[in-house]
Image 1 (cartoon, rainbow, N blue to C red):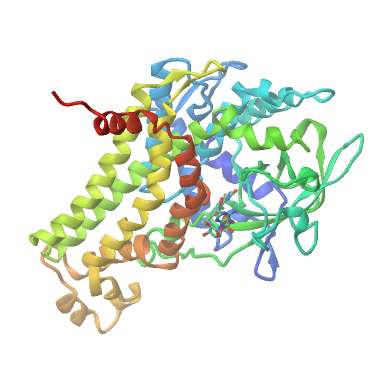
Image 2: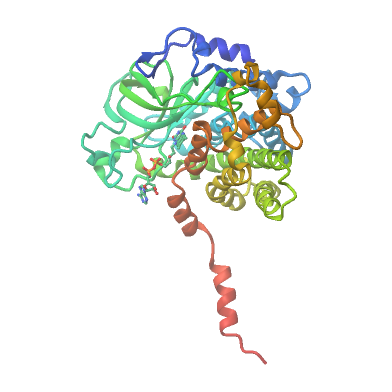
Amino acid sequence: MGAASGQQFLQRLDSTPREVWYGNNRLTGDVSEHPAFRGVAKSLAALYDMQLRPDLVEMMTYRSPSTGDPVGASFLQPRTVDDLWKRTSMMRVWANYSGGMMGRTADYLNSSLMAMAAGSEFFGRDGRDFAVNVQKYYEYVRENDLLLTHTLINPQSNRGVGPSKQADPFIAARVVEKSSDGVTIRGARMLATLPIADEIVVFPSTVIRSGQDDIPYSIAFALPVSAKGLKFICRESFASDSPYDHPLASRFDEQDAVVVFDDVLVPWDRVFILEDPDRANRVNEATDAVVFMAHQATVREAAKAEFMAGLVTLVAETIGADQFPQVQEKISEILLTAETMKAFLAASEASARVNRWGLLAPDYVPINSARNLWPRAAPALAVVLKQIGASGLMAIPPEEILASKARADVDKYFQAKTADAEERIRLFKLAWDAAGSSFGGRQDLYERFFFGDPVRMASAYYSWYNKEPYKERVKELLHRKDG
Ligand SMILES: Cc1cc2nc3c(=O)[nH]c(=O)nc-3n(C[C@H](O)[C@H](O)[C@H](O)COP(=O)(O)OP(=O)(O)OC[C@H]3O[C@@H](n4cnc5c(N)ncnc54)[C@H](O)[C@@H]3O)c2cc1C
């Protein structure tokens, strides 16, 4: 099939049965028409359509090595500078579409799967050919342009002890039994963004440090979302049907769900890691999946920082606050973040190296620095928007007011230096959606945590970073014999 169109994506979404719980309803019928999902489904469809647009198809796709058909560029295993550039360009087009507000466009997990497939040898294990499973799964997802969701972490029941020491050893998803058909999984994982995906991949994220009892939890596999016993329990939706009132939530609320595995059978050909803490702990680094995921994330983050810079500048100009030095200073903060993220990206690409699996991988030093800086820098983008938007962020009456008897008052009192009332309200609603609404609050949380716990990430960064040359320079100065 190759690169999918928006229509093909929507048809798949509506024809795939899945157990997705939203409140007291299990979703039935056309998911693409459900109020909680129709906005984001439409946006995802628009992204797929971009792949096939005559003016973009060359950049967004490449020729499948198996069929020669165009397939999405995020599946491309980069061997050359041009390949890497193609990946970045494609990801930037998708990121710009939502102003970086959609974290889980397909390129995020495609990048991970692409890297794992290149390093599939890593998965090989006596008796079961997990390496072949990974490679075939990558080809299957690529050729059918499937959308993946994923879940890495165990439920947040008691973080003080490992998964086997929870109140019930089956709270965290684990192996129950193995048979000739496959592996049965029971328990739950949190959190999977985008339960309207086609497939779910389950990978370990946090290092499994504990002993033998935790071995059944060290697993990796993939399943169609229609798998029997697989359930998604969604949070409240932030979506809305009004692009005027909720310009971001109405389009980009990706939804997040806790995933329950009610004795779900994973066929052997979908198992990638089984009861193997060593591989579970090393898979992301060993295959460079983390590098390529972080690369995609940095592209999106740069796009988001630029979008936020544009938004806050427009807000300031609209109310004539752009002339004040402290406002300019705050906007400069956002511009600096955008430039920093782009500089990390450029540096990582300029010093890309061929990894042990033959891929031209972005340099991990700048890309790992970007992934550690972002959870610290991103929350400030919303803070600046609030500092400059101030009470204007609450002068945002619902759209209906424009058709009411109060319209004359609105036109007079909501006008601003560079915008009439309708346009000013439209802009400030966008600012509120980005910085303060339920959607904006979720964005804040997402940027802080989507790549893992920033505290543990920073601790790992500290241990990993080669600080020796810097220490040596200090020691040399300390003991320098002048003259
Ligand atoms: C909006 C959103 C969407 C997400 N989407 C996905 C997704 O699609 N797929 C996915 O797999 N994950 C997703 N995540 C989850 C993300 O991977 C986790 O939030 C992240 O790994 C942190 O884990 P946690 O939330 O369980 O926090 P916890 O691990 O429960 O941490 C809670 C607090 O305790 C501290 N803490 C906990 N344990 C330790 C420890 N051992 N040492 C030191 N401090 C500790 C942390 O620093 C933190 O302050 C999403 C998260 C959010 C917020």
